[in-house]
Image (tube, rainbow, N blue to C red; front, side):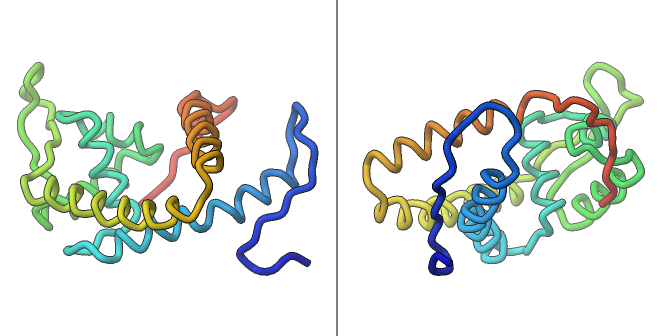
Length: 167
């Protein structure tokens, strides 16, 4: 058995599903997820993963309505509403009448949430830079290529994904 923390993969790449390869990637991705979570734990106020994801969704689509946020986060409207209520109460999100339809409520980041997201990115990027410095140039290039392709594939809608999560 390889030492803990070391990824060894002797599988040949091939087309189609590969559960063993997916498991190896899942194990290796833990280091990246740990950097993300460690940064989230260091910012004040502390945010849950769902709250952070909601802030990032609002950041990507300033003025999004509650239905758009629920769709973006793949959750029920009622769950998105409760999540939004918590973010408004903590001063992270503002509600305002929609520009196109005044009956609709639009969501915007507050100045404090913008500062929090900037600090989160600064902390996360420092941690990632430290790890990347210990990698070879070719390893960093391969990682960037692979993660870029992974992000593009993840952005494509999955076949049969109509479930909604709760917060």
